[in-house]
Image (cartoon, rainbow, N blue to C red; front, top):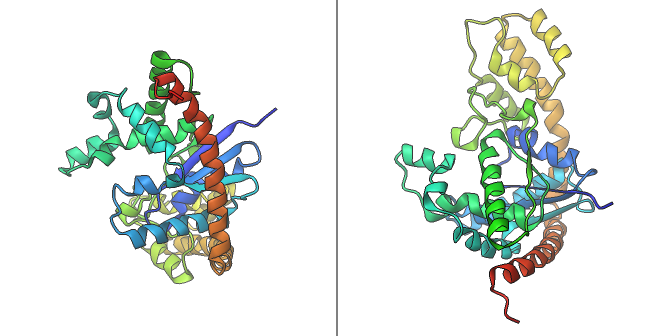
Length: 316
């Protein structure tokens, strides 16, 4: 029997942090033996925020290096960039023509932008439908994602059902995969770890960067256990180990931060060294991306042939 398909992706928007790893990348790696993995770099999505071509190119290569460093194997996982599958944009346009403006106005990201007085682009408004096209065009069964992206999977399922009802059966209904323990990876200030909040611990940080980030973690002086420190530490150690460490050092915030620093150094050092080795042969790394793009493109084109037939675009 053929494996089910897993699909997910990350925007090339800057340096990866441990929230990216534990919240998403680790799931891609852990599941690549069980599923046909399709993992992409969302460079089209990145255009909603990135207007610098050199930065976009560099960030795209960096995400690819990140993927390969954490253990995504090109022999098992199709690694590609979104723009190498232009059929995604074609499918998104078809979805645009099925979806009402009031429906998309309920999307959390758009509502947040409006609430905060931001002027939004059409691309940001339409973001959920491009994401739906990414997922549905590859017949994904499972989509590992963070809790904040769950609504986008719901929009994807609604869009698939609407298309299937109007034009005929074409799309599977994908399921989100959100492990409870990493549904929201905490940052150094207790909020979700995010580059936009400036509360991250870089995935390939130097020892000095690790020390600086951990020592900046916000602590609550009313508790014996610094919860923000503990929550990040729980990503690296099992609960039983942590209970002993935190019980023996109750109220000693600095010492507990030092324990976390050492565990982070042990975790990050081999990743940092592997990434540096990969970076020495960028041409070979880019060949992986080109090969993956060809595979993803061919699969998407088969789906689009059916879609064009169903909607009446195919005449010959």
